Length: 165
Image (cartoon, rainbow, N blue to C red; front, top):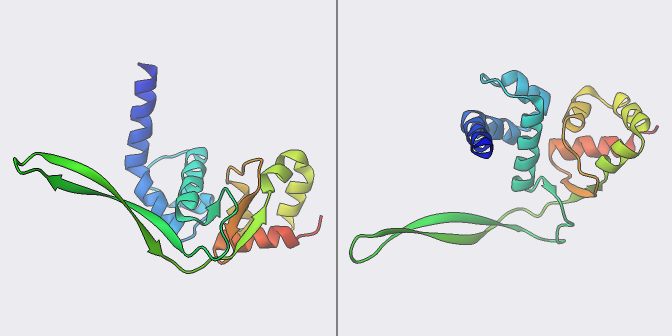
């Protein structure tokens, strides 16, 4: 029963805030800015997890090294089919959609954050407020990730890399 309640809670949270958070991520808001704009209560941790998930889906963040010159994304849709007797079924259709080729910045902020927290925090303090807010609330993994250099997050990661300790 506990798992059911947790799943129901996640579903309701996604239903209430998911679309709004995704909209703000597309506008390139930071986690703190999104939290201040939401009408529904949501924890900063839930927002940051959803923002991270959305960045990965939008390919602003790639968890593996992206192919050089890769200029498409896979788009999944479900198509309704009807049998000759009127029975309805769904069919999954995956298509490749052309996009502009992106440049990615390799970063390992998560490893730096947990390896030497004082150096990480010192770097953040020397950054501009808007760049710092883009980086500090995200759940960075302990592995390298690749960030789209033309996004607001990519600019913040580039500034983080240029910041001297």
